[in-house]
Length: 139
Image 1 (tube, rainbow, N blue to C red):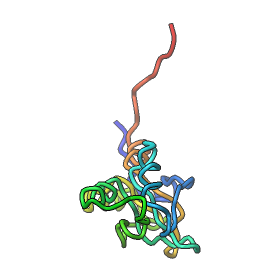
Image 2 (cartoon, rainbow, N blue to C red):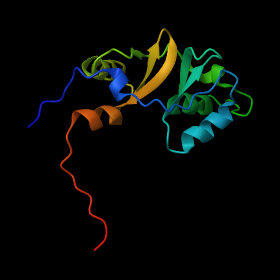
Image 3 (cartoon, helix red, strand yellow):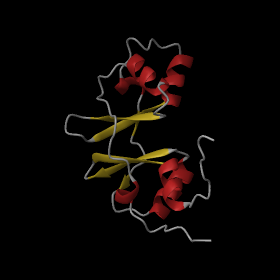
Image 4 (tube, rainbow, N blue to C red):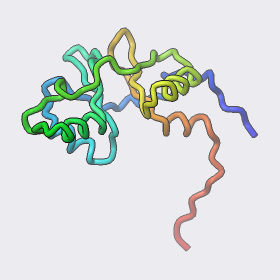
């Protein structure tokens, strides 16, 4: 059994193709984006790419439960401010601890407050756990 490399850096784990929105993005459009199944949360950034918050599935559900009109709400109205983040030089060990401590499934990666990537639990598991599963297609 191989021991996982918990010293691997965030920059080597992160996804750099990121979908992010501005504060003015409509909550209804955010809910559709999240319903696509590709995202459980979307970073909210300013025009300078500084991370300002994150809108998650839970934020959308909270707005619905509060009987808010998603057609009139914007990302800034429902986002969770001050999201948990990591720096590009942080280790996998630190990232895993952050995810567990804050019960999040993805963490934005920042450099000087600017969003440069996102790491999900799946990204971590794909890098830290060797798979012995083999997919066989066809006859």
